Image (cartoon, rainbow, N blue to C red; front, top):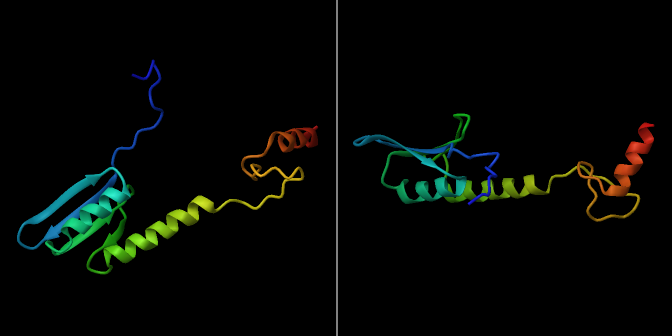
Length: 117
């Protein structure tokens, strides 16, 4: 029960795994996450001609005919980790450890407002 609060965002499972087989044809499996898509590829890539992961924009981000799923998963995890730590460098004059260029501490916010006037 959400007490009247509904989620503001929904994820529609836009990551798709496409399994292409010369005998059985094509199959598209919608996945809720890249982790799920990687698991589907690992389960099926040896039994099909080609397995592909397609992102929400329709771009093929993985194809088993050109890449190994374990290598791609490792690179994907590294890229995800790099994105989570990429922040603009900012030195807080108040030495606040929680102060970042895009999320200033209260004291830096006050200073910024005072500089505008």
